[in-house]
Image (tube, rainbow over all chains, first blue to last red; front, side, top):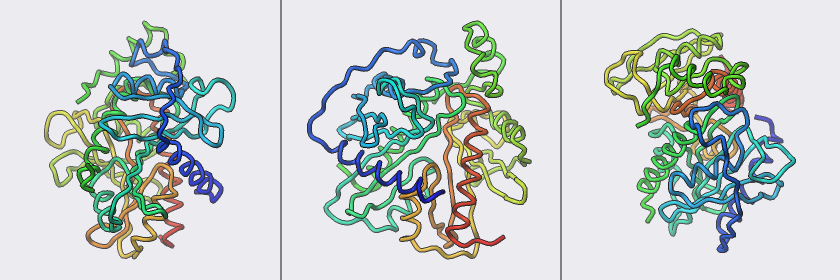
Length: 179
Length: 166
């Protein structure tokens, strides 16, 4: 990975974390997407709005926001856990929900009373194919699930992605004793 | 569990719905592919594969790619046994580097910065790199090709980061 890419990733994540923890939940309107009617149709552009609408279909609360770099992001909540969906390689023009991106990362942050040992996180990463956990500099634990969306996926693919995120998040919260 | 559909059925539905054009340049369309279908997508990318069975009795693919060897594990599969007809909603590309020592601090830093792959240390002490692919729902072969390019880049980056020499 190039250093520039790594740097940009970290900056984006810091902004997402700040936004995800903000108390106010300002719900932005997102358009209903015709592509959602046939969930198996291959779509060449996956937009932030598609991801947000699919999350709502699965019972999440979700809205499209803008991150510090001017790219779309989705703030979601399920089972009391607030998380961000960060988008990469996005189109730079158009309304936020309409911008297409090539891959996404589901990100949840956990502030624990006691710093978690790295071996606990390593055990999680070793035992689970989906999701990766790491310790941030501020002591918080981050759980991420990156998913590639480039070159031909469908809404049904997003459905499956959300099922994986549900399983990953629930399993991880149990692993670290999060309540 | 997502129930997969046959390739021919999906292709027919896409033709009827007029949506096949976008998939045309993105290769064949699959829906929660069987292990055999997934192996076919790897072959299209130029990989040689051998079918095997993992410790849980599920199918796995051993892949040889120009001197690189990695394993594809499958998750959330229907049916049972190690056959190629099982449909799975998740796959994991996995490679380990025997004899190399990497601290957990370094692994943590790598996980903080890598985009699609993750690293961990096995019980044996060997570092490993892993990348999960959702294979549930409908997607095009081109999508897998793009993911494999990410995987190749991740392996190269990880090998450089841990000072691995072939």
